[in-house]
Length: 465
Image (cartoon, rainbow, N blue to C red; front, side, top):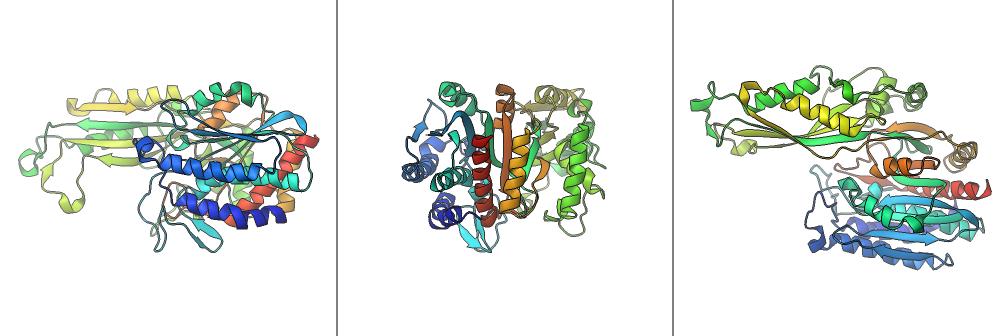
């Protein structure tokens, strides 16, 4: 472990992240009144203040909080380098909502350290990113190692789909330049024992399926048997797009040919992780995974489409549920798409399948949000492959590992299209049980330190290539 980074994290970064966790700066999708509530501005001010103090040790560095009208703010940091080249480092500071189920003594806005884990919303997803990026640069400065010009972008809209980010990237295009390397610190890790490189990200298609059968609720003794249940209709419509027995998606438009290299990679990841492929998840009772084959589970999570119903509307809580046949059912549907699947085409196929020829002539609408396509990483340049191996070996004591991730980072697809010749290092600290977006989210502190040190190594090797 780089002692400089270790000391910086303990003395300066962890206290700042602790204060950050206390701020309920939910992403705009979950707090439409974010601008009036002021939590996002508080988080930005905390990050800005810490970063301004630290970049004083990086001569010529600048920081600006960029604000476009009607959009979430963005922190833009420029650090001059000794090489005529640019590295773009990315993270975000907006958060997911609270969620229920936090353990005793913990909570989304209640930071607490237990067993080298900092619990609370946003520490791992993705508040640590700016601190990791700057600690890497400060460590290089401390030991007199060269690096290229670095641009750090910290957005405040990622958990809402990064819909503000393209406007900032266009606005700042001349100041960003053309990076030869992008470092994204918003991803996951298969374990906490080695550096993990994310090789692909799934896309997403989302929307609300609403089935309406009445204009108002009616006593079930009077209406049931005459009026079809909106829930039953919704259930039958979902069977059009998903096999309820296996979970397989029925629409061809949501599938792609998985590259042979990614299939081999899934097998290697499964061999490395073993049962941790699924045992990291909090299964209830005797629930089992969807396949006994570990490599198939990895592919299911990274290269195959899947549906999750993430919310329901139209139903009272059980203790308030009278004998009423309810007028409508609304289900929030989240389809994870393979990395190279066209999200627009997939969304159109879903809408067509759900709305066509509704049972009993019920009112059916799938109100779709704009889909987000995924990302498949380009092949690693030899220097970068060697650098990642060196970094993981030195700081974790084990080789670097490779695996796709099941989630989405909209910025990666955007940058992949904008800079097709750029190399990417996409990594993160969201490992087993860290539970981003759910209760008991935590930042694994030793891994955050080691990832910071690994990024310092990659930046040094990038400058020396």
